Image 1 (cartoon, rainbow, N blue to C red):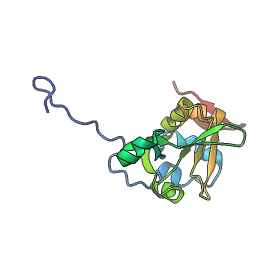
Image 2 (cartoon, rainbow, N blue to C red):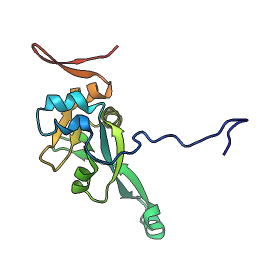
Image 3 (cartoon, one colour):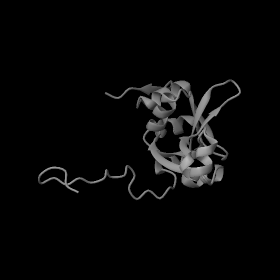
Length: 163
C-alpha cells in the first residue's frame, strides 16, 4: 500500500524482533538474588505483562459472540491493605506456570512500571509463584518508570536521574 507519491507504508517493526520468550540476559543472573541487582536492571530489561480474557458485563453478548464477547486486560492484584500491583514475568515460561492461558505482551520494565502507575498500582509483582518472586514497590516503581538508574555507592545505593 502506498502512502504518498514515492512513499511506501509498512507496519511498525516489533519492539523485540526474534524474541524467544526466554529471560532477558540482563535479568538472568540476578533473579532470586539481591533486590538491588534486580532493580538496577529491571527498567531496561524486556519483561512480559500477562493479558487475560475478561468477559464483558453483558452476559447476552458473551453468549452470542463467544470470545468476541471478552475484553483483554492486564492483571492487577489487590493486597489485603487495598493496594494494587501489576503482574510481570521475566519469561514466557514463568508466566505460563502462573496461567497457561495468559497472553504475553513484551515490554521494557520501565513501560510496565509506567502502566502500573497509570492504573493506580503501587507495585509490580515479578515472577509471581516462582522461587525468584520479588516485589518492586512504591518509590522504586516510580524511579523505574521515570528511567532513573540505581547505582551502588560507598555508602549504599542511590537512584540517579540521567541527564
